[in-house]
Length: 289
Image 1 (cartoon, one colour):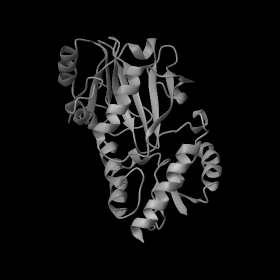
Image 2 (image 1 turned 90 degrees about the vertical axis):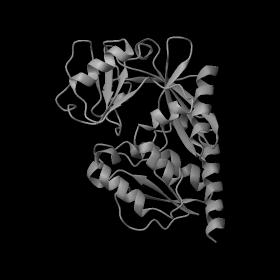
Image 3 (image 1 turned 60 degrees about the vertical axis):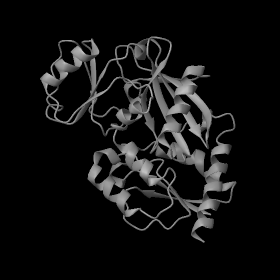
Image 4 (image 1 turned 120 degrees about the vertical axis):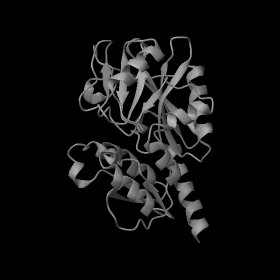
């Protein structure tokens, strides 16, 4: 069995050089199932002639969105996990509004096609708070994401852009952000990510720290409901959420394209995930043969 895992474009390898940290975890896991691997840039236009393709490290796609969508089109007919239609859907965070319509509790969200000061004023009134978070609908790693306090003006780089507007959730600072990882159809592990003092971003590059946890039942229920609401076979997912201040949780995002999987934090070291990949390879070969 031969599979491909997509990685950053060569021009971005310095920016995203930690993809190799996952490479050294994944290769031996898959080798035990007789799977050989090719690591290929997501921007590569060669046909993907593999039993299975995983976009696990296609980092940087959000910086070249037209190319990403063109690649998704060109990959039609290729066996992807997660499926291509799921990748396209998950690219734009307006999926949050769709999930909300399906009954999933999300961080309250408004979308503005062209953000301006009037839209921010309306959002502050609507959410009954002066503190807002604004972000593009397609982003990663908190790119072009701002926390605006009550009297902060809209950043020049955000004016006129399509943006999501949300209230700042106080539990980010007090409790942190929970990430629940579903691998091979089951909850594999979970972490809590806390921002550095005075920041709201939980990513490591901004000083955020993470700790393994046993998530509360309400968090597990939200993660399972979110995945069920998507209605497709999901091989892997990272479900991010935050406490709503009332004993429940609100979905921040679900990452189905290129999450950092933290396989070293799973109880079995990622064995179940590797076995699920091998099973998907066999199924792919059977369907194509």
